[in-house]
Image (cartoon, rainbow over all chains, first blue to last red; front, side, top):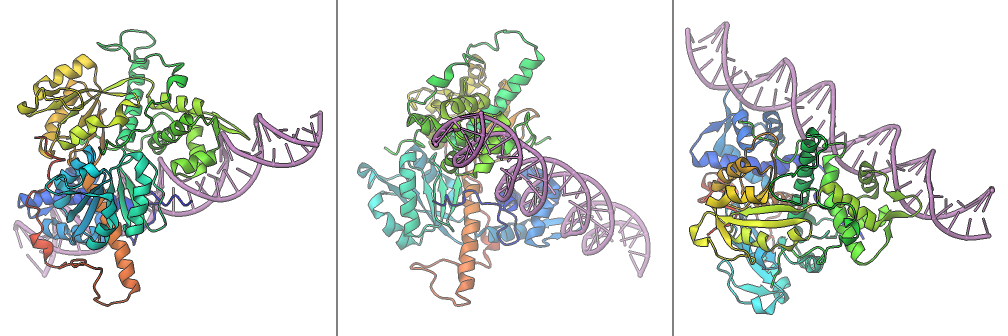
Length: 263
Length: 263
DNA sequence: CAATCTTTGTGCACGCGTTCACAAAGACAT
DNA sequence: ATGTCTTTGTGAACGCGTGCACAAAGATTG
């Protein structure tokens, strides 16, 4: 059943470590900002703080791309912007389709960050016939029936899935069958794809849960500091609520809800 | 200027490795699905494939929580759901505010995955006075002026930022000053926060860029396989477009656009 | 009760990623 | 041309995360 690698299995994709690839867009963003302010050069130190990373890490990252810096001076902003763009493949145009035009899909369609970096929304696709033809972000929504044709006609290789969890795997299979080899998945499901297809996952619920874990830990430390006293945690109630027989009741009435209704 | 740790610096937060914490929600989701199907027990193998991970990894992850399995049988689904929920802090109620009610903010407000896991949207906040009072996801949007009061009255410790990049840092500071200690940031900016505040970042543009990198790599390999022939890449044009003097032209007219307009 | 079989829990080794610290390289001043 | 000063690029050490492989634990059967 080959669950197909999600989030890259740490395979070094041609010399450049995966961790570095994940940071390149960050550097690129910081560099673009500098470029707009017409800053000619930056030191690794400055750029690192702008990108929120360690300067040694940044230098090592850049060293994988080649020696683009000048010792004693720093990096040429424009040149570096170009090199990173090229390395990331942003010098070419990437047509993208978004499947599932609910609230989230619409938000993505309107997202300016796509167009600004070589990504072009080639089509918006939804399974709901009532959506067909309706304009979203200045573009008519097309029905799922057209999916294969759209992919083919536009040479789309990147697909974004913003459907409910239940539909995701099926949509995924159709995308892959039609020629898509990279998928950005917003549906809260594990997609299983054949070898050679890349899947990246964005899961809002998971991010929040991770935050909750750390939040709880912080609260626990505070509580430990205050020793054991059942004081009112804050203004309102419910902190450290009834926590012992929740086991049975917990069973989400609507399990893992869609990534926003697509109508 | 302490850029405050983003994405956890691999500090082992009380025995449980960060990598494990990040997977717990995944397991929880798979377990919840099993629970709904009234499956009483699962083996590490089954659960692992359902969650899309290696079974050894899963067992090791669980071993950090304690010995909750039974050798020769597997794990009790209900019990494990409870233990993981408790570990993640989901047995308590987490009030959350969403700041920036544009397309994305609205999508998040409508997202069912929040409510289903102990998260409760306490308020929707936007800087646009025209938005004030307008109902989104059955809840009136409130003006930014109320931010501090809302945070305090509801004991909010988790905030979601879905504003344009330009407003994010300022909103972040107000949230933190009001008592928020965990932030989920959708704006394409590096937030700088004081020690003790956790920030997790979700960046659509970055995810796409990472996909583009791998996509390009795949295309490169294919091209290499076909040797050097300038054949028509696919049906349509533009693949491997003019790629050499883009350096100068690249300089995004609208740089790093907001994470969807908030009105 | 003993034997067998299944599945957990973990010791161990390996590899990736991060960070330190410094030598090499070049700019700049004299 | 020489020396000084800044900043890069990287060798080396360390730590975390992953996966193998197996012993221990318990269930189950005869």
